[in-house]
Length: 202
Figure (tube, rainbow, N blue to C red):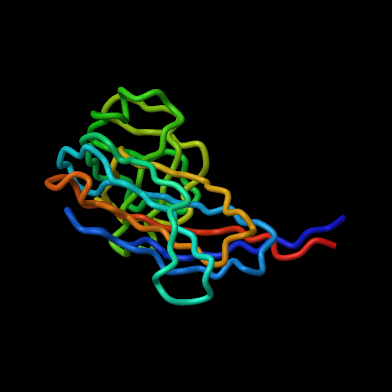
């Protein structure tokens, strides 16, 4: 038995202001035998944040906005992010060692194998990387090499989350609502949404 799976982006990196609600693009999943939805997000300020609510919604209708239903709700991005500027000049694509002047915050205190964000000057070139170690006030090391090159002084943030959600084949359309009013005086953030669609089985 063979299957055909199609990966695609639904919404690339998008900013959500403090105390606002964001909404991803809508994806038609009616033809899929099943789908996996992928959400990445990170705080991009050092303002204390009690969390952002993410709402994955599905519709049983081909169009319109009266038939959205919550598939799941969850809260993430809790804490006060630490910002650190990259000192590599530049940080090359494929690099696994990121040099910094300071390794405070969760770069040192969190258990390793946690996500951190690189917020590129071109937002679409931002990325999450998985930290695996550090040398105090010198560098951090990551599991996989960076996807993109990043200029010197590009800023990293140490509060980032990722989620994978199964979308049942009964769903017709899906979208993600990002409720950043959960903390009315919290942080700004960026998020992106992708999907892997099982489109055929033979």
